[in-house]
Image 1 (spheres, helix red, strand yellow):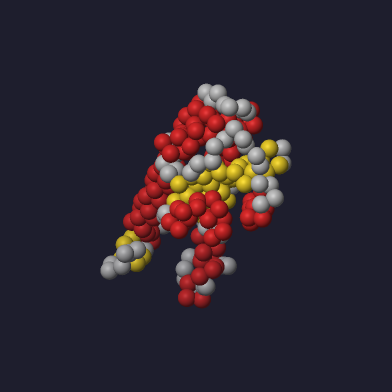
Image 2 (cartoon, rainbow, N blue to C red):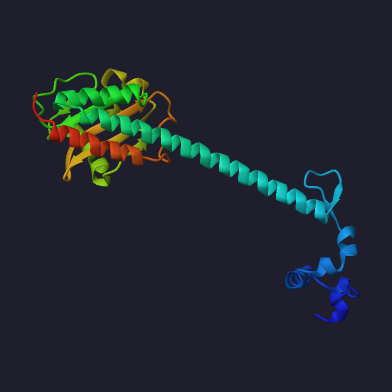
Amino acid sequence: MTTREARGIAATEMDEESIATFLQHNTDFFERHQAVLLRLRLPHARGGSTISLVERQIEVMREKHAALESKLTELVVVARANDAIADKLHRFTRRLLQSGSRADAVGRIEASLREDFDAFHSVLLLIGEFPDLTPQRFVRTVARDDAELKSFDSLFSAGKPRCGQARDSQRQLLFGPDSAQIGSVALVPLTEKGTPLGVLALGSPDRDRFHPGMSTEFLARMADLIVDALTMCRGA
């Protein structure tokens, strides 16, 4: 590019890329040619008129500021939600620490899910024999060779909670008569040293309450606490 072209004398022969390159390498151009800067006009972002380059820059900065404020608000909301979950998990832990027996622990788990987490459709499905536990709406037991457990093989293989839709057979096994009104579920595998101990199932009539994209970290921590309570609190 010649000096003559750079000064705009042959501007009609210059392509836009050359002009852009020149301005990128001469960032003080408009400072040295303020009259040119003031004459530049751009379409208004909302249409209907034109504005100066300075006004457009101010508008862009305002938009960026608004976007940053929105992002900050979103982060604050997420942080508050995480704090609330952490507080609930803390209360859940304290309840279990006061358990005197496995039956007592199961009762405390059910109470905390209902009172602290608003999980009114929750089921603790345990695998094997638990003579010290009385089957009820919340806690159920199945034999290790029960064919219906095959549908949970992938859940135990993954070793982490899964949220979303459940198979009809899974909902029926877990929620029984209430299965028809369950729109979405959170399935939490309970394992002891790699051996399946059971499944904690949380259900909701809302199909979007539990979805595949939601965080399940607190559910995994809850699973560890439940397994510890069930294996450490043995006896009536």
